[in-house]
Length: 158
Image (cartoon, rainbow, N blue to C red; front, side, top):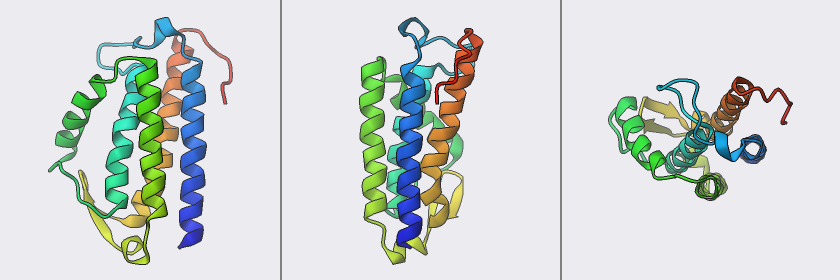
């Protein structure tokens, strides 16, 4: 179990750093830019990751979702995401939430590792939750990469 947790922690840190580095290349005048009315900005993507990480930390502690469905969870998250209005707020919230994920991983027990936890899309094995924070942050870093290409930044920001 320790090896699985250590890999999850390393991946969480690596993906957190990737997202922050990618976000650091977003110009201030592009923080809230979106390619369409239904798309999220780079600022909103980082805010989303910050809010989601607290949910992941909750699940890693064996606590069930507060939402009854994915749509309910996304609506709850959206209101919290919109409270994050500046780059500094986004980075601070994201760093704190990633720390919460790492603390939850550090507290993992054998009993928890073999359990299932109900999230907003149903019960999932703990092994799913252990791997999800890093994957989630990495996927959203890629979305910021895409936004950068939309406004002509074709540099490789890895």
